[in-house]
Length: 422
Image 1 (tube, rainbow, N blue to C red):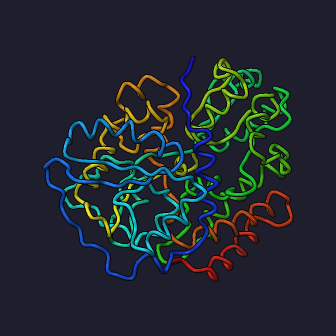
Image 2 (image 1 turned 120 degrees about the vertical axis):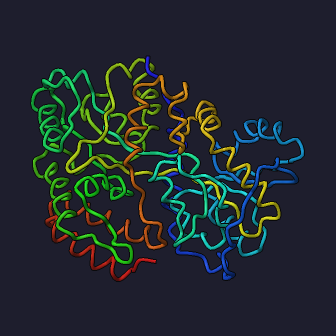
Image 3 (image 1 turned 90 degrees about the vertical axis):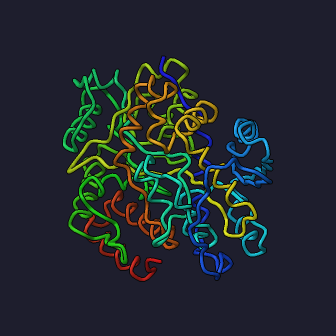
């Protein structure tokens, strides 16, 4: 039996909470100049370290960090677990009041909101082993303001039993094969629809693998580039699944709906993150993993998926920044990350951790590791949430067939230009 992770509920809450973080960069985020880069040296950590963490991570960390405290007997770590739905406001208030902790867990889509309050990563802290997509979420201008902690990416889930009925014994590797397999799932294996594609809130984020895999970029660095020829071609491909009635434009997007339709044979392909494995086990039973497999996303010019997750940051106002960075460094080490995966189910941001036994023995899990090698993150911008929401509306128009992909993206580009790129 394949191993499943416990990320399901965590990731759903994380995604919802990140969506709520729609405000721009707080004026309270700090008007002082960012702290200059420092060094942490090799001495043991000492003194008091305060750390905030959200959700289940906040509940699991106190016991997990005891190993760090054994190796650093003169350090005392004080934890505060914060619900995701209260975290953004609490951090914003703490920055305004000068009451920040030394170290905090930070969702990748929140980095731009508070980056001015984060200390620069010390110059003697090696970050070369982190997945590039995860590392990019720690960049703020010309500064690195955090360390990747855990990561998430999207891959293709497909029902192997129905695929065999449809004449497929392996996963599709190209866009043409993906569409043909979805067509065959419907025509030959009896599925109501061949594949479920993202719809509703966060649909744009869920479809970014298409333009990225087609060579498109959604910004040029200083402006949005949402109606480029590569973008239009990618979303014409997305729209074609609905035009050809291979995907359902009216698919139920409520919690649990896509798992149910995958398990009951009605929609035997979907694209989602590692947390889906535990969700499918909950709906389909412990043995259901024998009926499906996962694969890297089919390629156009390449195969590029979305990278999300959470980082670790140290605040400018920290009274014990050196020791806080040492704790962050320990949490990012390959052996620690493998142990944390075993404890929490969070996927490691450090590439070397994927060679550890905890992950190397899981064939399906290694698919996520392969996909993370090319995965990319959304722009680190306070404008991102507003532009993504406008893009969700554009995708809705495409699914309904009320406008062409080219016209929808032209209108989206105009809206994004008005919003700006901060």
